[in-house]
Structures are given as C-alpha cells and as structure tokens.
Figure (cartoon, helix red, strand yellow):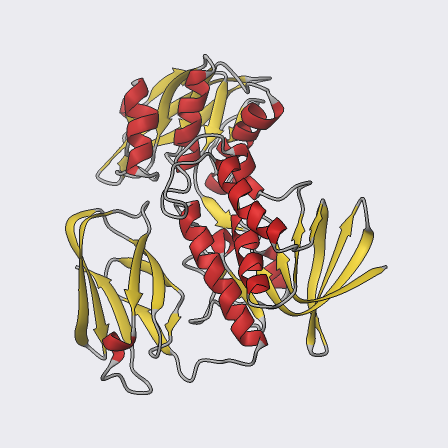
Length: 416
C-alpha cells in the first residue's frame, strides 16, 4: 500500500477543491487533491455554456474556461493531485485523519493528514426519488447525464424531449438540445414558480419559445422499449385535476428535479448532517462536527453560481490553515432561521470578524427585507428587490452588528 502524508487532504477536484487547496498552499501548508475523474475540473468540464466567472474573474467564461483558470493557480503552486482515484474510507486514526483510496495508476493509497476538506460536490435526484409511476422504458435520463452525453461523449439522447423539473441544468439542456436540432416540447414544474435562475428561464426557454408548465405534475411515463410520451396533470388549490390531464408525445424524458450534496463519505466519517441542506452542519469556520474536517461548495449546500463556490472554498482553505496553526474562535453565536428562511450557512458566526453567510428563501416576494436580530433587537435590514427559493441570498455580518451581544446571544435572520 502506498502511504502519503500531507497537512491536508482535499477530497474533490472541482472548483471547490481546487480553490480550497490553492488557499491552503498559499498560506504555507501542504495539500493533496484526490479526484475520481481522470482530470481536475469537476462538473465544470461538461458545462460548455457561458455565464461563469462574472463575479470571480469579472468576465464571462464557459465552464471549462473557469476550471482552467483555477487549475492554473493549482499548477503554479505545485499542488499534487491524485486523479482517477476513488475514496473508499475516511477515518480517524490517533490524532490524524486517514483517507483510503484506490486508483488504476497507484493501487491502494493511504493518505494521512491533520485536516480534511470535503469538496465532493453534489449528485442529481432521479426518477426513484420523485416516484413517477408508469413503465420503465429506455429514454429517461437525468439532465446532467444528458449534458455529459451531448457535450463530452457526442451522443444525442433523443429527438422529441420533455423535461421534468425546471432546475438550471434542465433549462440549459432545453437550449442545448434545441441547438442540436431536437424538439423540446415542454418543461413541466410541480411548483408554482421556476426552480432555476430567472436568467435561464429567459435565455433558455423564452428565447426559444419552449412552454413552461408551472403547477403541473408528471403523473405517468408511457412506453415499452422506448419512451412514447408523458401524462401531465395540472394542480389547482393543491389538488390534482385529473379531468384536465393531457399527454405529450416524446421519445426522451430528462429529469431536472434537484441536486443532493454527495455526503455518504461524510456520514461514514461521523459528520453530522443538516436536514435542511442534506450537507454537514458547520461552524463559523466551515468546520463540521468532526474537528479538523471542513466542508465547502456543493457538498455543503447546493449553490447557484460557481463563483460563490470558489469564494466559499477559499475561505474554507483559509480557515483550515488557521486551524492547523492552532487558531480558534474565542466565541461563536448560533444562528436561528426566522420566518421565510429555509437555512443559513454557516450555522454560527464569529462576532469578532466579518462573516459571509449564504441562505435560501422559502417564499417568492418582491420588495423583501433581510432582517437580522440579535437577542430580539434588529441590528440590520437589507432590502432585496426580489427573493425566491431558487436564488441564493448572501449577507455579511461583522463586529459592528454584534457590539452589544452577550456570550449567549442568539442571532435570528428572517425575510419580511
């Protein structure tokens, strides 16, 4: 068995893992990236559309271009990467964290480190998760798999397509398949509002005249050997209106019904999971419930923009470097989610420094206000022209917001 030792092991070589590793190395600590694909870049490598990097690099890039920019930093810092490697186990052995992985090139590898950064990203929910009845013909794909087939493998999954769910990957694939000559007949969304970003609704559906059926449920998939069509039923006042059901003939169904943080490895390592995000609970330093294990990017909570992933992951790398040097927060305050807020990450704040928080709304609302209370006293109001669950909100809180906070002060964030 090959044995390695570093200050930190970063699991995942996408934008999150590369950004965290680069920050660690820049602060003087050694790190190795373990990536299951044959090259670094993660999911970005199949996202050939533009729209990335507007915040991070102040220019519009494709996914591979964004990945290349970050990978250049990793290469310049001479950070080693073990690609084509699958992590089998993450465990505590004495005072160290130990990662066991296996690869075709190196066989079984044992990597010992003082700290670990989880950056495994997320996976797609599939038909089994949403329980669509009907037969089980070929032609049913997740949107991300279809994206890989078209953009990487060079295969077109079908010609007549219906997309279930209005997540961003599904919206982008509606445009991509239209460009390839396919006919996208509809996007069907169970919620009364889209699940994807507004810009993708406009650029990927409206610009191509693709119908979006809100408050509609796909109640059956038809077909024997191959998909032949779907049944769609409207929802009115919370009830399915079967008398108004209609069929859409198609040979392909794409599922864009949400993403789930990839946390089986985290759970096996004893990391406590937040049921609101399906990612780890983290403190103000992005450290999980297991000391020395940090989390960032889509494995922590699903982001809208890779720019936010890179930003959050750099902070995770910086916090891991602080932890390795023995630096700890003197005190932390717990955050409580108030009305209309589904979750806030991280779940704690350090009142002695600036804190960057990410959160999701539970409502669609124009003219909303992010309200921050400390021990019941409003300390900050931030106006938001529009909020909706599909678009992440960010907020910064610093020492000035906690000037009168006691040791056990409670912070509450609401949308009013």
